[in-house]
Amino acid sequence: MGANGSHSNGSLDSELGRKWKTTGTVGDIQIVQKKNAKESVKLPEESHSPNRIYAVFNKKGNDVQAIAKYGPDGKKIWEIHTNDHNGLGPHYHPCEDGHARTIINRNGYPESEAYALDAKKKAILERVRNYGK
Image 1 (tube, rainbow, N blue to C red):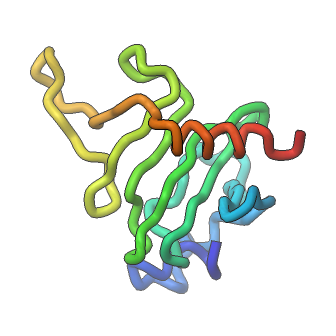
Image 2: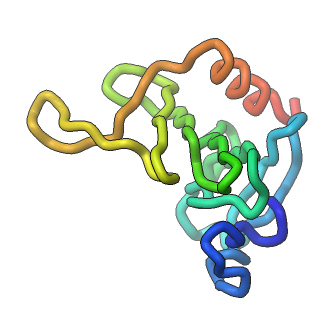
């Protein structure tokens, strides 16, 4: 995960940057987890190392929670979620400036833009799901 996951925002010495550890790899994908297991299972907002893919498993460790691709600036390009989102099942959220893009749903409320996984993202998810098997 690079040194501590906080380089992109210039906070190399922040507590936030020291909350992650790498527990394994699947090719070029790093499996990460929070050092404090009681905290929520979410991926870092930014990456210390450009052009990375990070994955995190749920608290039980029995399935992938999320996978994100970070760009040259260390900010998220997209993030895969394995929970259902409006009937999509596993899906991804495109990101802009590191955050999921927002749309107005049919009820007039903002929500994260989400799409079904394409073949490349499905393959990434399956590679990570087979980690350790």
